[in-house]
Image: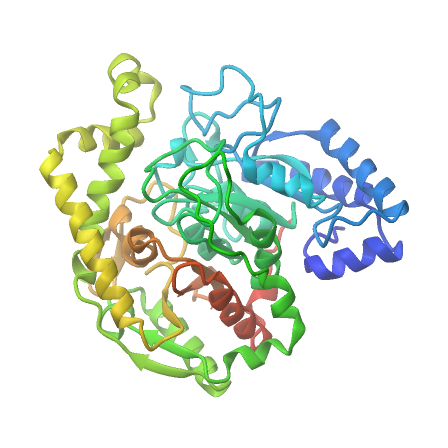
Length: 472
């Protein structure tokens, strides 16, 4: 029995009323992780540290010291995020020989908010991949069907939330690594704007696109975690001094469905509603119908260059990691998994001219996207054109024909990744095989609240976010 599937606001009320304690919730978290160990969601569980932190959280609440809605609640962080005293391996054999000496800034923020860190989640090696089939830390399994992948690279974080091991988990997102696991595990996941959250103490992948984001069961819970970690950081020169307006209070202040009245939704109909698995297209159409019924206005928009975007992202996503790993790739090639080594070797083959051209295309695309979104509040696409794939799949059959796994993974998430915009994935139902489908809500830069409000409104009029995998 676990309470960890409950919303953060409900658990916060239970803690303050004495219905439960932080110690009890952490014990539930540890028990759940142990019971579902075959999912391989975690690479490290800090049992002693979590229990001690939970006891401190209870003592603080008893002394009327209240750090906010995350106070006393168990959370997890991805294995590429520093936690002082723990080894940050990023799912690799190449890193983490010595424990981290300092917390990552986002971890400090979670601690300041009263959250209890229970452990580190499994990930695709070095965050370069979308399956979390990791040759070094174990194959992570989708809780909806263990024969399917949990996506990646933050696959363990998606599993941990979907399987009610924690109330929320941090992931990192470069080309989709928060949004993809959110989609296939049936939870909510936010990629913030580039520069909104600190990357200090986080192992980089592609430094012009990396960002840290939360996964949680609902849009509202995702907002709580985002509020805790967002903001300028003197340790990270890429963060921006844009004002942070907490999203969670505004979502709770009114009936969530009111956020949908007059919401202007943009759809790239000739791109987002074709070329998917049929159940994905049907699911997104049904979600759009629900938004319209609640008062939203849907408009078809055209975004120049969207068909070429994945090709440009593949260049950036290959060159930047390859540049960072150049020495290790030459001296320790056998310590990389086969797929990651192949990606890095491909990156070495691109010329400087090709990289610059990809970045120029990226800037041109962003300008066109922002112009197309001038009169809309959020852009709606599927998060993925398919649901969770079988382990080992390298391609997928879509409505328009076969597609590679890598290109399929990036088809929709590349829009926000290359433009640096925030995006929220929310569950919109199950396909014919009982696997979750995700919808991606992309908003303007530093307007995470808009995407979160739209997602929260959608979840107020539907119940897909309440579905949970049946676990023994």
